[in-house]
Image 1: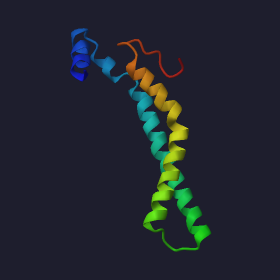
Image 2: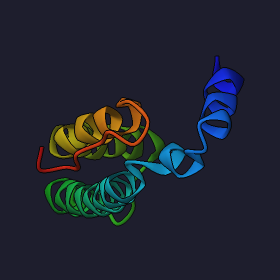
Image 3: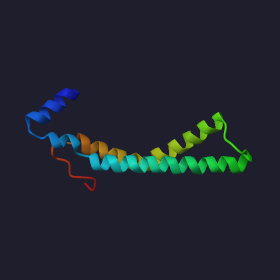
Length: 99
C-alpha cells in the first residue's frame, strides 16, 4: 500500500529514500523523450519522402508515432529496468545504476 510505504519511511526517518532512483528516472525520461522525438521526426520525414505527399494524414501519423514509440521502448527499456530496481530496493540500500 502506498500510504504504508510513506509512513514507514517517515517512521524510520528515511524520507529521502522515497526519492532513490530519481536521478536515473530523470535521465531515462530525458532519453525517452529525445529518442521518441528524433524517431518520430525521422519516420515522418521518411514517409513524406517515400510517398511524395506534402503532409501526413491521420492514419500515417499514427503509424509513424507507433514506430517511434517502439524504437523508444527498445532503447530505454534497460534504463527503465534499472530505475525501477533502484526505486524498489530497500530503504537507503540502493547501490546506484552501476550496481
